[in-house]
Image 1 (cartoon, rainbow, N blue to C red):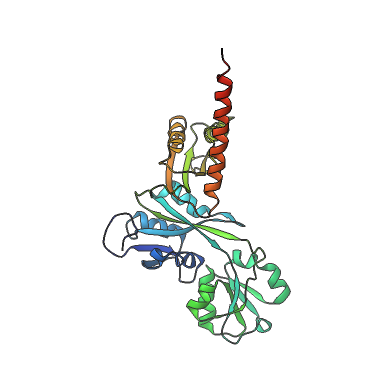
Image 2: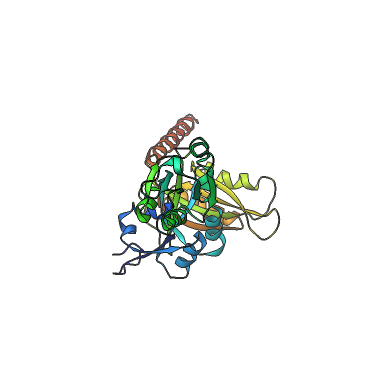
Amino acid sequence: MDTDGTGADRKVRVAFLGPAGTFTEQALHREPDLSAAELLPRESMVEVLFAVDEGDADLGVVPIENAIEGTVNATIDTLAFDVELMIRRELVEPVSLNLLAPPGTTPGRITSVMSIPVATAQCRTWLRANVPDAEHLAANSTAEAAAQVAKSADPTAAAIGNARAAEVYGLEVIAADIEDHPENRTRFVVVGKDHIPPPTGHDKTSIVVYQRADRPGSLLAILQEFAARSINLSLLLSRPTKTSLGDYCFLLDLDGHIGDEVVADCLARLKATQAGVKFLGSYPAAGSEGPSRRAEADAAEAEADAWIDGLRSLID
């Protein structure tokens, strides 16, 4: 089996944010090739990325953006400054949070709830209404919380986690979908070394742009390169370069593939006019809205070209 782009006839090693039962593991299990790989749990996003960069894993799966909490800075900063990796694909996973407890437990018996603080905060409305007196305990991940509750077998203890964690650790879902924002999603990226998947017609490209100088209009100059070519930006994020106060770079996600002439031309122009451009990958985009957006942009550009041609035809 080969999903690492090397053509090697061996089982691919995939590092992920562990332990078993995290949302990262749940997301990769929806991908047949990834779930069939040798799975290597790591304790942090940074460790996952370094495992791939140093050759201990062929691929890595890490969260990069959440609809409520925003971007995952540890992932972004490591990709931008510390490793030389490329994104191979993105995965979008619904964040469905459940109250997990040992078999036979009911919400009325719960006196403590354990989870990662972000997950607990996203369930505050349900917790206040149903277990208002329960003590909130912190864990390093939802999976770790589930593991500790399962190990204790305490019928008054519960964890907040996903359905995968309940399955892995032998717990029951005693209350489902308790999150305050049902439309919450987390975007994960699959990263590897020195390989760009071919264009699919529904692709995304990620780059980091380092400014040549911090002066008025510098960000506008960067954005105009995309606007002039009708390239849609789906993410624009500033991050400190960690070199001096007030010195920032920009992470951008754009529609299209490096194999597209218009994208290649845009990146070449940025490379020529800015201090640096780090290419983080061109890869298949999740979702189905990409082709329609591209068709609309192409139609608008064709209409504009026809308008210009019509005006030029009047030159006498």
